[in-house]
Length: 299
Length: 215
Image (cartoon, rainbow over all chains, first blue to last red; front, side):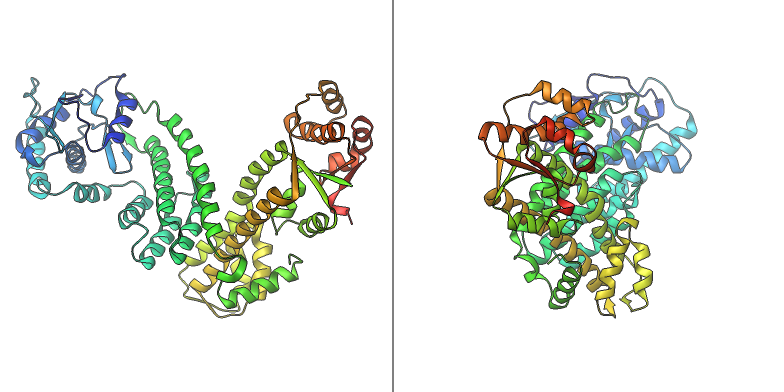
C-alpha cells in the first residue's frame, strides 16, 4: 500500500488516477515475506535522491525478474501497461510512503519486517539488489523502461515503444520499417478487434508521413490505439494480482469507442488533405489503376 | 419521380467497388429528385465501417504482407502466387489488379500500389457521400410513429424493426406529409420481390424499385 505525503500531483496524474480507480478500494495484499523484505532492502540500499515512484516500480520489477531467474519467486503483483509493468501499489505487503519534493515523488524507507526470511532467500535478495543497484541506481526513467521492456511478453510491444519514442516527425524510413514490424508481429487472433483498426491506421500513417499531413493527429490516434491495446494486454499479462483489474474491461470498452471515433475523424482529415483522386499517385500506378477501374466499369 | 433511397442504394453509389455502383451512378445522374432519411444515414454510418473492415482493410493487410515479405523484387510469375497471400474475400480483386500491372516491381512499389488503391477507395467514398449529403439528397426526418402500419409490416415479415420497417415508414411519411409521389429504391430481395405488392398495398408508395435492374 502506498501513501501520498503531499497533495501535489505527481508528474503522471493520469497514471495515478488509473491506479486509484483500479485498486484503491479493494485492498487485499500479497503477504509474501520475501517481497516485504525486498521492498525494505531496496529502500535501504538505493540512494533515494535518485528514486521516483516510477523508477521504484521498474526497479522492483527488475529485481523480481532477476530473482525469478535464480529460482526465487517474490510474487510481485503487477500488470503490463504502456510504460512497462505497473505494480499494484495497494497490494504490496508493506505501506510505502512518498514525499513530493516539487519535482517527483520520492519513496521513504520502510521499517524492517518483523518476520525473518530463510537465509538462502535473503542472500539471493541481497545479492540481486546489489547487482541491480550497481547497474541502474543512477539511470534515468526512460533507460529503466527500455530495460523492463526486454521482458515484454509480446514482440510487438517493443516496436510500439520504439515508434512512440521516435515520433512521426523523424526519419520516415525508420517509421515505415517500424510500422511493418508492428503489423507483422501483431497478435492477430488474440487482438482481432484491434487488428482491423490497426490495418486502417497504418496506411493513414504511411500516407501522412509521405505527404507531411496531419502528423499530430496521427500521433494522437496512434497513442490512443496503443493505450487501448495495453488495456487488453493488462488483462492477459499480469501476475499475482489479488484483486484483479476490476475496472479495466469497462475502460477498454470505453476506449475502443473513443479510438473508433478518433479513427474516423483522422481518416477523414488525412483523406481530405490529399489531392483529388489519382493526382498524388505515381504515374505508373495512375495508369494501371485507371485501366483497372475502366475495365471494371467503375469509371 | 421522387426517389427515396434505402441504405444499400447509397452504399452502392459511395463505394466504387460495389457490384451495383454503376447502376447507382446512373440513377443519381438520371433522376432529379432524391430523398432519404436520417435513419438511413445512421445505418450507412454503421455499414460503412463494416464494409471498410471486411473488404478494404484486407487490401491494406495485403499491402502490408507484401511490405513484410522477404522478396525484394516481384516478377511476372508472382501473378499467380501473390493472390494466395491475400484474404479470400479479395483474392479475385487482387488477381485482376496484378493482371493489369507490369512486372518486375520492387516490394515497395507493389506494396504502395495496393495501399494507394485502399486510400483511393476511401477517399472517393468520402467525397461521394459528402456530395450526396451537401447537394443531392434531401434528408427526411419522421415525427409520426404509425404503430398500426408498423404492426402490419411486421405481420407480412418485414423484420429488423428499427431499420427495415422504420426506413419504409420514413418513405411513407415523406409521401404523406409532403404530398409527393415517392418510389422506394433498394436492393433488398425481401422488399423488392417477395413482399413488394404487400408493402405497396400498405404504404403510400407508388413503386418499389430494385436498383439492380433499374434502367
